Length: 339
Image 1 (cartoon, helix red, strand yellow):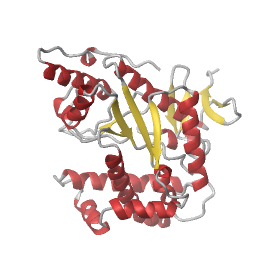
Image 2: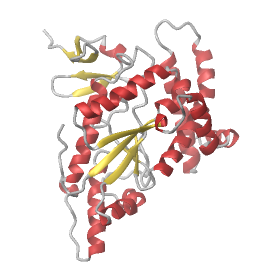
Image 3: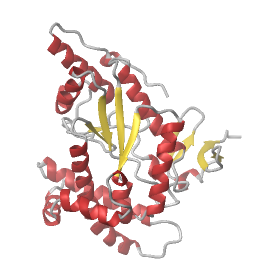
Image 4: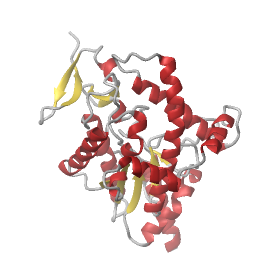
């Protein structure tokens, strides 16, 4: 998967060493932000060279350059496949994950083309953080994590590595690990509820608006994952449960964010979610182009020219052929020519 350069990603030129470091840092950030996910608003910028978007990350990139170290990124992602078969093929990573992992590795390689030490990206898998909330079995989370590591090695994605809750000494007591995570890093539930309540469309507080947006988005995804074929509960019952679970998920997500920041203080924080101009996180496209779906909530479909992500139930309405990988596992779909 080739990532194309454009004029904005060319290195700047300047006189002093300090200016040269800053300019190189901005070149690196511009390259990354060619593939950013932005929230659309009246305050949105339209340039990957936006100085306001660069500034929260500039010091970290500049420090790595001065020390001649790799630029390090962290990305909480790849938690585990959705338990809803109407969305995905199964519980193991498939072509959807392969495409995303390959793109992320290629992006790091492109950084190396303008900065010799290159870049590395640590996938901070949050599947174990949320498994009991989203309904993914611990066994499936384990299998998913093992397979992600295997794919990274098999595909020779040398810029990628993984970190997850299992890497902390918990002796396989995952409930205790989640308890300890929230105990050390978690926020107060009542305070979070106030932020969500106050963060509606009329709010001018960025933190409250983010809390409200995250709450609504998580509630929607949790409901979708539980509305699988054959389940017998009413939608209203599921919605009520998911509203409670969404608060738990936000608290754990923020706790996981704080743990990652403590563990990797020098790293630039990427996110699968769109971000506002000047955010402390960089929203990143997982396939090198904009798509609101993620590999773990979708199926990869080859259109003849490229892979796109679709919900499994939507693919099955098309004239598409299921393709298996070399191990006999369902991998992706191929659209068949129209007669």
